[in-house]
Length: 165
Image (cartoon, rainbow, N blue to C red; front, side):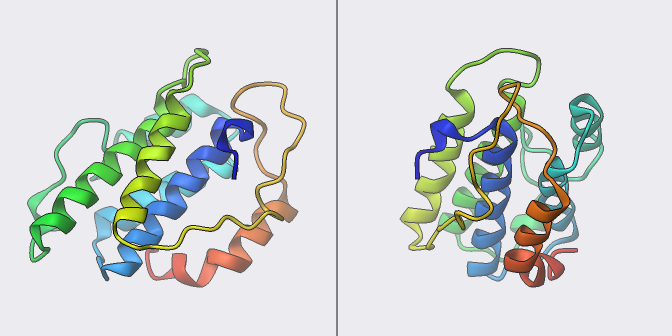
């Protein structure tokens, strides 16, 4: 899939899916991770990006260079700890990199790094084309998702996401 054509919002959702799949693969459950995953998915409906970003600063796991709490990493193998920490960093940077008007390739690069973590761990990542369709976007961020599009996402990932809510 060519992520360069995705809006930043879509790339952020793809990053959220990547983190969700990683956590499911290694059966990692933690309230802070659930909060982060749900926050990342909230970008689909966020109208005000600044408010979405501010909410992301008050959750337990914020990524963005901050270390992941020991309570999250406790009991995990070292390679899983390292990959989870890196993945959190990558998926949180997708949306922040061009938050304030810059248009760079950073969101795509962070998404690619996140997907490399999945590939390294033999985690299959396929985005349903009916959800990730090219829409007419008037900004690099794209518009909030329609109810129909969000419903399609929920139909595919809703049950899994419930485990992390």
